[in-house]
Image 1 (cartoon, protein in one colour):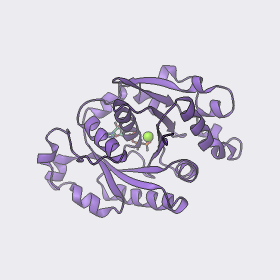
Image 2 (image 1 turned 120 degrees about the horizontal axis):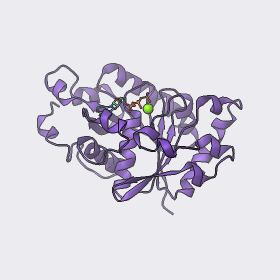
Image 3 (image 1 turned 60 degrees about the vertical axis):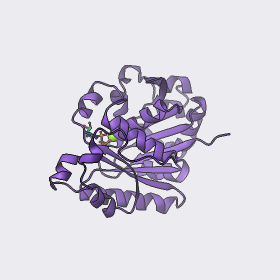
Amino acid sequence: MKQTRKILVTSLKGGVGKSTVSAALAAAFAGMGSRVLLCDLDFRSRSLELMLGAADRSVFDLHDYMTGISDAAGVIIPVPVRSGLVAFCPAPDEDRMVEDGGENYSRLAGAISDLAASAEADTVICDTGAESTTPRTLARDFADTVVVVSEQSRTSIRAAEITADKLSAINGDIDTRLIVNNFDVKLANKKARAGLLEVIDDSSIRCVGVIPHDDSIPLIEDSGVLPTFGPVAAAAENAARRLRGESVPLFRGVGNLRRRIRL
Ligand SMILES: Nc1ncnc2c1ncn2[C@@H]1O[C@H](COP(=O)(O)OP(=O)(O)OP(=O)(O)O)[C@@H](O)[C@H]1O
Ligand SMILES: [Mg+2]
């Protein structure tokens, strides 16, 4: 039987685009025919049900599933993407996750695996908040791949490095990759922000994707639609293909970015 791909999307730094990248990767994998389970595991400040336009259908959450209040069908929300579907599971609030003294965290990996089996998912994408407990738990018990998200600022790259170090100390076999998000080509060209080579050079993590800055992303997210076309969707598809082991250029289909970019 084909193994399920288990991707943890993380960074200790807030606001770098973990949820945006998680949603875009989920849409990209689903658009390529994968069966995707997307789990919101940001227990402090969940956001994906809004980005996916699934807020009014998010009745139950992962904690309800772990405690038997809901079955798998109740917590898995199907979100249409192009010709496929993303199976989405909303996050519980942190207070409920910690209420039984950490037991819930030890049951997390098993619960997600069971949900993935119910959804017949071949790809699981876990979005996390800017904290370390959940990523550590998933790195130890669940994920085979860590996608660390960073913007092009040095503080964000440093946070990515720290994140990757902490998680590989927990699981030395985990495959750790960098996605540079919100990459601003105009500012890089004006030398106002770091160029891509500087970013990659500053990081020891292998880069698997570069998602460009796109002014329309906050609007798209507010309207609850997954990005399935445009530069962010194209860049996410390239990253998804590279995560699948295909050798595709970082900027394939990403407008005229390739020509304009200052490397
Ligand atoms: N490539 C991009 N282009 C333009 N805006 C972006 C891009 N990526 C993310 N953003 C915007 O940046 C903000 C933060 O993104 P997001 O919520 O995905 O970050 P996060 O790392 O998940 O944050 P948190 O740490 O709070 O969970 C959002 O308003 C989002 O719309
Ligand atoms: Mg987030």
